Image (cartoon, rainbow, N blue to C red; front, side, top):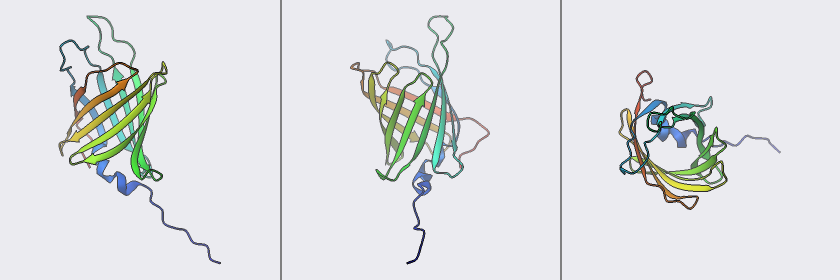
Length: 172
């Protein structure tokens, strides 16, 4: 009888294709395409690797747009962890927001885009699902599109935002 350690997949190899996300990002184009839609919130995103490079750690600060000269409401802080799920053999993410909402997504690649199929529970207990598409331009720009499949029985308009990487943390 001999004891041996079997090599295991840490997920680092599977996540390498998402290395472009690392850095600090800001939304530069988030105007609603529908003239009847509300103004969109401002969003700042910071992405880094955990110590073992097995998870991407995304921290987002979302500041609501002020309504007609009023002070904006408090910011919503959201944390997301993106990693390799050895059980489903897919990239998967988990998200938690400061208002008590939480969700998860399964990620897949489609050419230059990454598609995250999300499901979430909002603080009031309603459920939402969306198809989020991230398209990286190979430099310092990413478009994010979100197509809600349902949001607690209400149909929401698609979201289309452009994010740019802030200077100081170049793409790896």
